[in-house]
Image 1 (tube, rainbow, N blue to C red):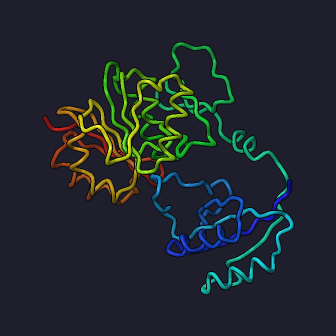
Image 2 (cartoon, rainbow, N blue to C red):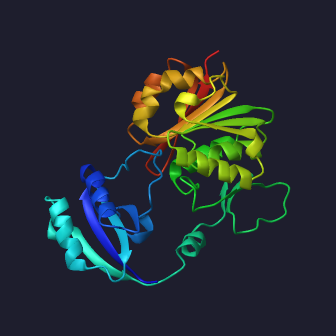
Length: 299
């Protein structure tokens, strides 16, 4: 059926209140986009650590309502719920009926990372090529699909490792994409950790889809397996990466390769200094405005 789309442009600190107000008014769905992107192609949804706020300074919230929803009524109600809201922050548009899941999947195409690793949507059959390592994802469940530069940096790093017989910890696993990729690349077992139970559900679903469910253990942070792993990777945000550095050091065996991402360009120097206490061979790799730091746990 057709929908009425209500768009709000808000500052980052206004986003939680605005999203709550839209939910209270019965929004059928709410998506967040970068309001400062110059073109539609740049308006990608950011893949933050689950439970984290986007890093954009200005956000567009797009909320879908029933096509017969009262525009004036919604405007008046938002004015009461959000007294700071200005008229130019609010707009409406009619949205034609379409298969939303199909539209999303049509935009999610197979993507290569490194020499042999590919990410495929579950509805596209990969070629029968024994030289390819394929991870199948359901975009509708994924908190990470490889489209964000930080995810791409981490996938390429994994593709460059010898993972045969190794154990890995993926901290902030989201969709499980990194842990599953490591298992498909030869790791014997993986631990995925995330602070959102929905992320663990998504990871379990994708692991089942890829035939590696028995090799992936999933935990909330306070329940996580305390044993260190042969490989450690975390794709979250710079603040938590700094705070959790001692925890990450304890989670990596001596000599273990490690990689952290979710870091904006300019944030790496402080993290390099922080991680130098426990890790050697530190290096920085960048893609667009994002950074990956990698190295090896000091023996």
